Image (tube, helix red, strand yellow):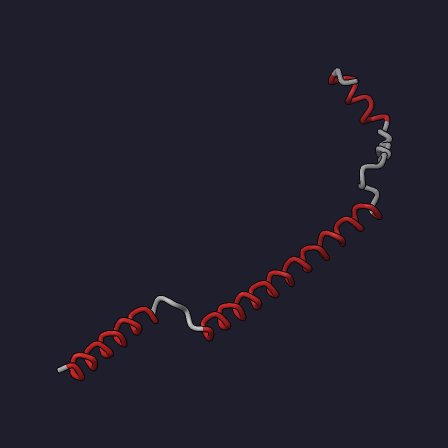
Length: 93
């Protein structure tokens, strides 16, 4: 009976270790998770680089376009004598 009891004990121990195996991730799972994380990070880096390029282009357009906070001269519009008369008759200045 000692041998039979020992065999049953080994079976129970094996069953117990199998039930714990589901809770501990295997090294292969860890590698797969790490690889997928690397792919996600690389994709995020590409998106960030694209956004930086867009912002750089917008900043360059703003600087070269004269709207980077500098003084902008207003456009002078000359009115015709008829427009002047209409404006005065309405009471405008």
